[in-house]
Length: 199
Image 1 (spheres, rainbow, N blue to C red):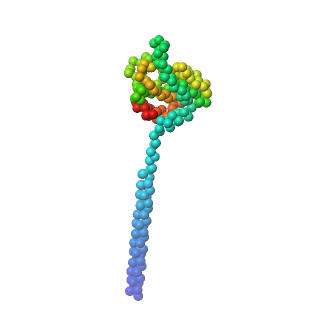
Image 2: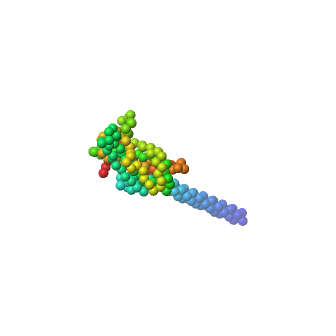
Image 3: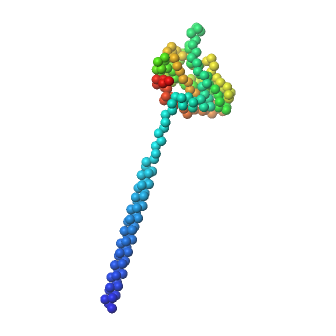
């Protein structure tokens, strides 16, 4: 009888140890599996897809500038040789399609010589050697929506080597004091300032 009791205790103990052992192994395996899945997830998060920003062509930039609320509609190099001591002008006519009346505007100019090399623009009263990107304040233009400004006027220059130029509207301010800044200005500068003109 004692022998049967001891034998039963041994069997129960063995089964208990085996069960605990299996449970522990199963837990280790499932922990290991979860850990692997977490590591895989972490790797996916660490390597996001990078989108490369495509650079605009000059034609694409021109088209985008043409769709802005205030745009350049005409450029002209105005020679004033026949007028005594009058400087030549870089004329840029801009049109207001913003839906509001404009009080002030700021333009920027870049220029090239006959060989398409960049030229530093010198204004009439400039005491430096000029700038590759020249800012011009057009104050009190008082431009009603749908109208244009700049005909027969422009940036007076002290250069005799400018063959080509491009203007851009940098910003404008309406009568409520709201200012629009051109989001394509940096693209324009990157493409044209102190760069050879590619046509």
